[in-house]
Length: 422
Image (cartoon, rainbow, N blue to C red; front, side):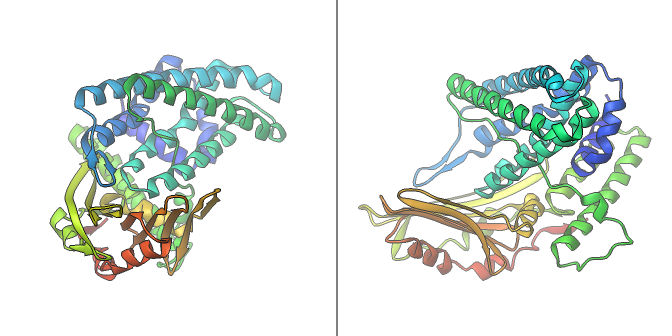
């Protein structure tokens, strides 16, 4: 198994899909090879990340601390999720093949399996992002849309669907895929008792085209940052090619880790802050409420480190709030891309609202429920740190004031701490 070829395929799919799909369609790869040399490897990423998140890193529960499921249950869920992912890919391929004639395409089970597997790639690879706090959900949404885009680009090549019918073909496939995902999620949750399924998500495209030295952008602009990332990824790719030629398996593994680090870290290698460094920003009181609980930890997986400090505050009666400060560390590049893209979301309910927006260069998320006077206010600092306060309050303005009382400037000043330029 040549992992360099696999990594090259993933990279080309995510960064230059329009060029990669014709190549994929022209390959005579057998179903067995598709599974053993690609699907079984890449589909293992979300299952592994689900285990790491659930059993190693854990999930934060306000006022209760960090919750982790046992290793035995975590491993069982990982195996189940992995098996279902393999099966779901095959079922989706059958759907793609069966629908082809209805949209002017040509039935071909092998090409249908290629379409399903390579369209799922963005979600499988991007499952690493859910180790991040609330912003991981935003990135998941971006990735879901990118996975749909990948399928839309691939169908005319693999299933020979006419361009004018490809949109309808894609929509029907995606609707059925959603049903499959819901059923799979419910199956895992019912059997394992833990919601470990990770949604589809993926990085943005177009980085390679921005690395062309003939095109210049303001280095502080969004396009400039993408261009710099593309150039650093190109350099990492050259190191990988050199490792492949050397035949040194250890060197190849390190080169692969460097490639992942370039994507997640925005082209940089990042050492997340020590728990003690984050503790310095956690106050003894918050809006007059004394601190009742504190914890801080640093975790890492696949070369990505994340540090988190958590604290709970309360008056011993009905008012309680929870503070969480996170250093996204090795995933700061993805946070930066989300901030650059000016991700916005707004939703109204009968009792409150939820919205994500950008203000003064910072990405902000707020949520409020008037029925029980509870809410959440989160802010991204330096395209790396997140500060979140959630709990009981008179209004969302109270929660904003609590976040404002934290030394945000001091936290933001550490955005380059532990960063080694690629």
